[in-house]
Image (cartoon, rainbow, N blue to C red; front, side, top):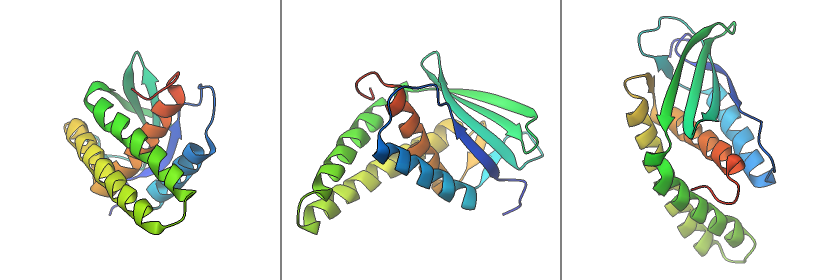
Length: 162
């Protein structure tokens, strides 16, 4: 992977209230994994590595891309609507997963985790499709970006994700 076709920094909008330690942990791990290994190629731009800032704006997801020196490259806005069902399902299964962690017996936890991974994969593929004309990303990058999007949306939701 060429060094120029990757993310060197990722930030989420932090103008939210309330924090959940579990979500914070998932976000931190996703950022570490993402910066360690990713493929990120803005269509029509020959440069990089890139800095990505993810935020919500007017009910949409905003991805602001800059070069490694912070010079603006492009911003892309995505509707959250196509992700609502997956976000709702992912929230439900994550809550079940966290509850199952407190109970004895790994069988329930394993079954929930399989469901969680399935929803995560589906959401990552949807993200890849929605970004395909704007930014090319691989499957692992899409999975980690979805984790960050989920963390951002959960934080910004007054009571529930969708």
